[in-house]
Image 1 (cartoon, rainbow, N blue to C red):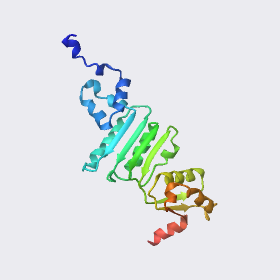
Image 2: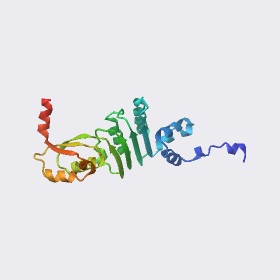
Image 3: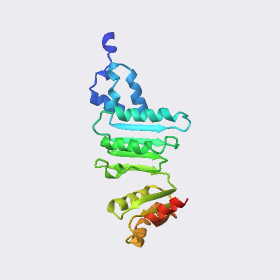
Image 4: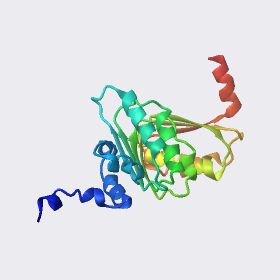
Length: 218
């Protein structure tokens, strides 16, 4: 073998679709860092179909992490995200960023979500996404209020999802627009079948306008 052929960068000769597949198996930070290798690699990472974001406790600059995730999702060119993984062990990323990122993943036709993070709200797009096949959302919620409960099927499914995934939930307050709530006892029995509810989760119904006036009195 000649020295010239030995120096050929065969990896860079692969088509974009194969390079994107290789980069998709790496942590997203590492995939993006390949952009400095050469002009050939500069935009390859924008074609990845899987994202793997990790925020570590000892990283003090959360703004850098936030900007990085925002930039990656903005520049992504893939038509469908097979996996969106976000593992954060601190709440420093803010309460609005995770729902925003989930919305962006839904717009990219995400198939699988794997989220482990302290979060106070979930976007409605998570429950209406037609491409989502697998969801793993680890919720560290101890108290939650469901506002504007109208006894719709989507309302019930949302509460059931939260009860099935928020394993440390202690109090669930359902603020109902319909009073008295229809089938309140049957709904409570239905909700109590979930693990978090069985773990001494208190479920209470409150009239919407009563809740509103109580807030005015505070």
